[in-house]
Length: 231
Image (tube, rainbow, N blue to C red):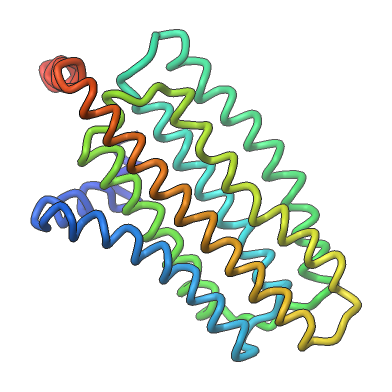
């Protein structure tokens, strides 16, 4: 797990966050969420990518988000030993099946609509999503210590609303695959706007709920952290 966290840059992001004032570090997470949404919005609006590319990108994003939720469940210090074993298993099975089924649909819809995005567009867009989700993990979960007060089950649950943009994308793609390009673009821009709202709401909700639990459970959180560091 530590090797995986290093690969996705969590220790580096934590070192950066530690140097920033708390309001700035908190706001930076929201800025990264918005930027990761604006990149596909701008690319679709300028016809660099198609709605098919957007659906495929959202499937990739869902896999990343699900993976990060499993990391949260695996590294949670709250809850019982049973929930720490059950939550990652449940999340892996549930999200694995979901990703497989939706991935098949995403590929079918993307191919039927057509793909115009190149390697550069995909690297930039997926890279921005990876940075945004990794920053959220580093800031909320590890740096702020929310893993000391959030149970493994609750670490997995917030990923479920993030399924909505991909589900909406497959539906929009299916219903617009035979329409003109301009109509597909308009539908895709609305889809991206919807995804942005969902991401911001989930991000703020996770932050506020986690901070409230930290405020209400400071002694317990500090004890868990000290025990983990001593171990």
